[in-house]
Image (cartoon, rainbow, N blue to C red):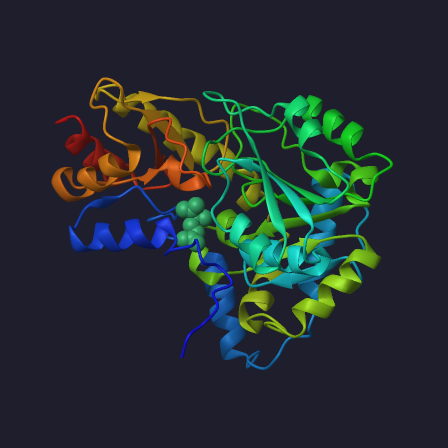
Length: 380
Ligand code: GLN
């Protein structure tokens, strides 16, 4: 049988490639973004309780109502937004699925979506699987800020949406209030949707305020805002997240969602609903992870990598002009096989594999893991 591929230019995601290689060579894995420390024990216990209490059948299609109510309360507390849990929040199996569903909800063949590169690697395949086209705008190297003039020039009558992502994967850059003003100027009076990937909302450093789209009612009217419990509670393997969108947009989103996964893992939703009132669990995360960033940066000073700045996310990028002039991909493979540390080459986040010779390191790791990695990295 021959398949006329929907994604002819796509191979296996770089995260799987590097994690597989890391496992094969028993390398310290600073590649794929996941914590290697235990998640919150209380939350894990609440999910175990939910299983024991027989919450093991389908949850309602849009999500377990007490969880949606708890999310609405949290959104009001954090961002001052009044979101209706009945019609404007849907629980999804992870942030990536929320983004894919939002794109599938709005895209028609031939539509264009503006994507900033480096871009999280699912966005463009998600767009193309829907018969639409990604129009890429490069974030400006080396601090990866948005060039709004370039965004303006990329807009055409076919532009259906802009995807924004702050804190940004892979670079750790964040959008500012100034960016929000530009985004407003560019979208005002148009039919352009915003898909806002905010999975790292609670991983933002140096007391920077997260510029959630939920703070801006006028922008929220045209937005699908996507979140991840996995990132917030250090349980990426749970694949739990949610999407927030105004009622008419969410109505269409649910038409897609109901015939895809239909509803999410019930015990996790029950456990999360009982845990979300614990503000400290998410408010303390930034400081906890900032310490890891700072410790990793300090350790990396012993190496010949030049670390860039990370204002948020699990990640920090580094250049290696003092080490080699190989491509980032070749170096990432060689580091894994010969040095024993896996990273992600940032060229994997560009459609044309633009290589600024940058590697992405995940610092959401135990102290010992970061130390073990740097002990190896000092050798090159
Ligand atoms: N978000 C994670 C990262 O950026 C990986 C998720 C995945 O492997 N699909 O590394």
